[in-house]
Amino acid sequence: MNRLSIFAIVLSAFLNAGCGRSDAPTTTDDLGRPVAVPARVSRIVSLSPNLTEMLFAIGAGERVVGTDDFSNFPRAARALPKVGGMQPNIEKIAALRPDLVLASTEGNQPNLAPALEAAGIPLYVVRTDRLDEIVPAMRRLGRLVGARETARAAAALEQAIARERRPRAEKVRVMFAVWTDPLYVAGSDTFTDDLITLVGAANAVEVRGWPQYSLEAMLAAPPDILLYPRSSVTSAQIVALRLRMPGVAMKVVPVDDDIFQRPGPRVADAARMLNAILDGYEDERRRQSRQ
Image (cartoon, rainbow, N blue to C red; front, side):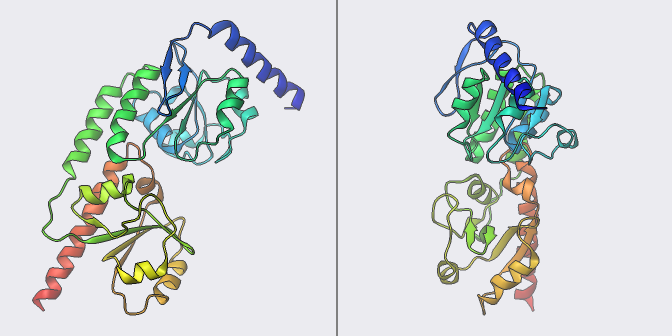
C-alpha cells in the first residue's frame, strides 16, 4: 500500500468520524479523558496484551481486528494484524478502520491520543496497575463494547482470585526480577506485589513501582525465592547474577512471562502457580528441619 492510499484511508476515517460520530455518547476513560464511543462497537484495535486477553475472555474477541505486536493469547489473537509495539503505527491502525482503540496506562505513548484524534478514531485508556483493578476493568470494557460474556467472565475471575488467598504462618520473602543486568524488580504498589501478598508471602522489595534495584540492596536483604521470566531472562543471566551473590541461599524459579506479567484474565493462574511454588518451598524447609 503506497502513502497516497494510506492518506486516503486516514482522511476517510476522519471524515466518517465527523459525519457519523458527532452524536456518539461520551464516557470517561481511566486517565479522566472524555471519549466519544459509538453505540455499536464492531471493530476494535487493542494495543496491550492484557486488554486483548480481556476482550476475548468477555466474548468480544471476534470484534478485535488488530493488536499490538505482543498479543499472543489466546491462539486466535496471534493471527490478527499487528500494528506495532511500544510505538504503534498510526497508519496501520487507521487502515483497519476501528471504531475504538484500547490502550493501557502502562506504556501509553503521549503522542498516541492526538494522532488518533486527528484520524477520527476514539482512544480509551485502561488502568490495571493493581490486582483489584483487573476485574473492574473487565466489567468496564464489557459495558463499553457490549460484550455478552462479561458478567460470567468477571465473576469467574473474581472467584478464582479469591480461591488463591492463603494465610501462611511464615512470610516467605519473594522477589520478581523483570531483568537482571541491570537488575529491575517488581516493587510495592504493583499488581505483582498484590499477588505476592494474596498468597501469603512478602515482597522482598520495599521500593515502589518497577525500579532498578542495586545488588547491594539485594545482598542486604536477600529473598527466599527469586522469580524470573523464563523467556526474557536466560539461565546464563541468572548464573551470572548468582555468581555476584556468593553465600546467598535462595530458591530460583523461572516462570511464564505472559502469565506473571500481564494484569489480565490469567492472573489467577499466576496466583495458583505462585502458591504451588511456595508450598513446595515450605515442604522442602520442613524436610530439612527434620533431618
